[in-house]
Image (cartoon, helix red, strand yellow):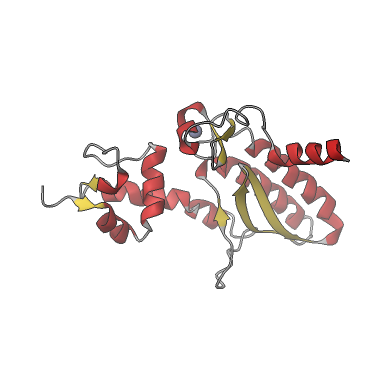
Amino acid sequence: MSDLLTLREAADVLGVDVVTLVHVIDVGDTIPTPPVPKDFKDVVFAPDDIERFQIELRRRRFEDFKTEYADVFQEDDAPGARHLEFGPGWLGILMEFCDGLREFQNAGYRARLRWGKEKFGALRLFTDCADEIAAYVGERRGIAYGKSLRTCQECGEPARLRFGHSICLTLCDRHKHLVGEPDPSRDGIILDVDAWSRQQRGDQG
Ligand SMILES: [Zn+2]
């Protein structure tokens, strides 16, 4: 038993913070071999588990994407720089968007992805593009946004926006537990926070 690793020890070996590691376990698709206790701070790892978690963390950092799309996505390393701050289930949307940027590049325009994030359960992508193509790129950003609200951020399966009491995320049935108890006043009612906010403003005005 002594060769088991605690959560802290595993996080140190993997070079991630404990919060990230707990999130991966909470998602439920990559879990340690020893039984997972209800309280995640008591989680232990078998030595053999480390490699599987390494692979999963690499996937979550979009490492393969960064290599394949180095022509359209150059990660900013400056202090305070933003990165790809969303779940791996949106990889397909990200690639489709970057394929579009690549087409613009091939046509001779400046078209780069700078960073992206999840906000209110939707994918927001930030680009650096030539003025002539700004409207087209904006349209494709909107398409990516719309798709993200129908795609589980964790696994890419069909999904909808899930409202917990303190968080909302776009998740499938298998991952909806990640927002905690659903908030009945909003869950299943608000499916796009931006559209809902616009509507609220319109109603008032
Ligand atoms: Zn899912």
